[in-house]
Image (cartoon, rainbow, N blue to C red; front, side, top):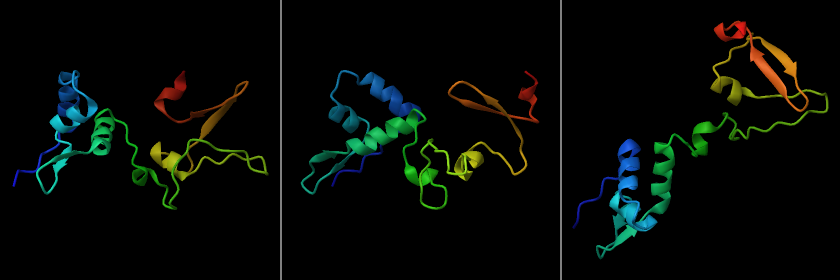
Length: 126
């Protein structure tokens, strides 16, 4: 039985994809190790894993499990105004920014936007 391929990841994957730019997507994925062998030793290319690895190598994580806020919801980067007039950002975003209870912000209103500027940091001296 043939040895299981070790898929390339990170910079090595990106470099190999550049080198193989003349091949089809399936051929490139196979050459980068994203395939398994069937019982009769036929290669089965796994394009999904290949694309996920490419995105991760580029710094893009589409794995929703890593972004959930503890209640099984994924951050959407969209909010709506509540009936009481408030806009709630949510803990997923504040934790992602490393914010703590008591952190203060200056609010600047634009024509169609709200700009929050954190106070008490070195960059608020602009």
